[in-house]
Image 1: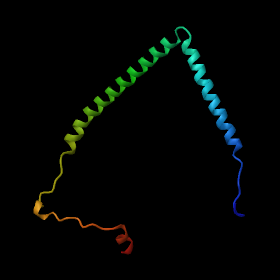
Image 2: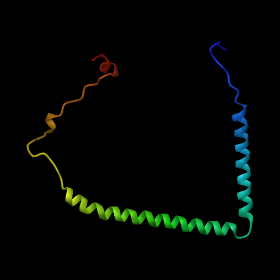
Image 3: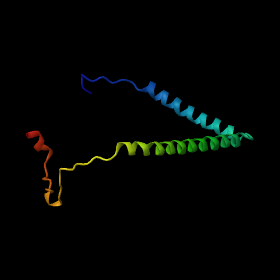
Image 4: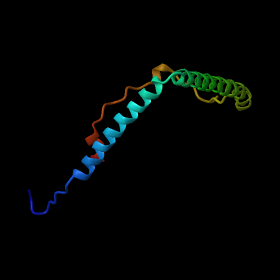
Length: 106
């Protein structure tokens, strides 16, 4: 190791990582234990189904409102295009390849 380098100990963060892993394992165990109790799994599933249905209903309502609002916005905005220009496929020129080094030289 060089003289200008300093090495720090990492054991505090390693201990925190071990505590986090143990905490996650304990949390999973508590969740499994709770689901094994009579009626808990059924209640949680019913609640989850209600929440999911509500979220889907809200998403559909928001989509419908945006779709309805977009119609007058589109009608008001109109279309814009150039009238004094004429373009032809014969006017298209190939793009010449360039290297990134070319930009640095200019």
